[in-house]
Length: 485
Image 1 (cartoon, rainbow, N blue to C red):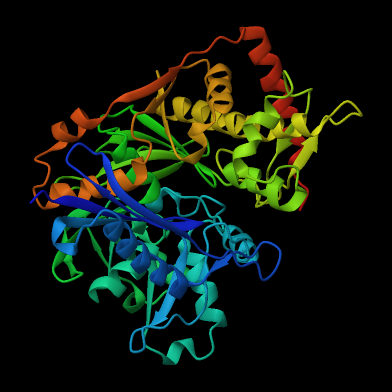
Image 2 (cartoon, rainbow, N blue to C red):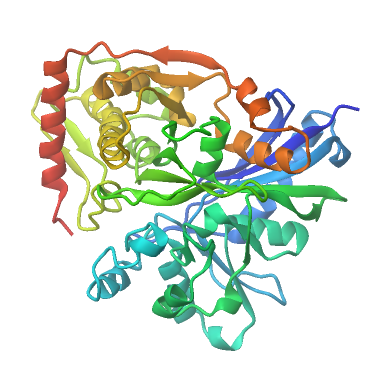
């Protein structure tokens, strides 16, 4: 009987289970959304039990829809929203608090306090990361400070991959890509760093074992190997087969995440990017990446839908934006949680600039889409300056790449071709690849490259003077968003 690879794709807004064949084709899938919990402005939480149950439910639903059983799966991989932090009781298996989501900014005062002694980059040499509310260490510290009697309980910490794996197998493990997002792992040793644990006040006994991204960790579902773990953006880099230094991809989802493979040596950023682990496949050396993280892209479309009501469904944004020939000199900086790469300004807030009586809902919709492309442009520029390597073509994936208007504008504002692959489920596919390599389902990277195919390429056609004018106006809008909070 033909066997397949399953991938758990646990994201910011939903959980999915996708079944792939050897060609990287989707055989079956299921998806369930979970609640977004906002107790206070800037606070974002998820219910870990709801996520756990949704993961279990999507596995059963996807297999059932295709008439498959657990025995049809050669292995399962996990990919996940990365920095989101869960703390649970080892004896009961129950979370002691809702998960603190990567977007959550409640630890901003703690960031400022730590930055007073050594600056925002005090841990960058060891971790590749600036001090920011984004990463897991301070979220965990906040939970330990606010959960009653935390010091008297046998607690376990994990990012979402660890939480899922623990519920499937009983094992307390994470992989190097997720560990590299906690701000507690040393990029050189690939292990928890005693100096960082001391600085953040984190007991090592809370932390999972760090493993590679592709190995058999344990079994679940009656004996199926769980054999791959990658943070969602690293999984997309693998799914896009960006295995060579200089190859890059951008994932357009709730936020945007642009990663460039830099090979087996971490490249320190001088232009506001993150240095992160790209993957570690079994016993092979780890590979690294430069990353530009953008907090709000697809989430801005959801905001127009849910908060302003100018569209009823997210899919309507393209038609509304296309109802006008250009942005009408309207610019939208969606700094709802501050600005991430390459600015790293927690004091920034959202700005809608250039409004006149001429401006319409169409102009606002177009400005919202263009904000995604402009923010990506800023990150690409920083990445090229850091690496010294021009990005010759940008591989794209994620939900927003179905928007042809956005992809065309992205190519125009970058002056670079934008390439959409035939399989856009690259995040889940990357997790499947990691798991399949571990159990011999695929023999090596050449098999994975053979699966990658192009669906469409956009080539830039915008005149250089028009590109320069738009870029200058975008920079003015950025400047006006700063120093608000």
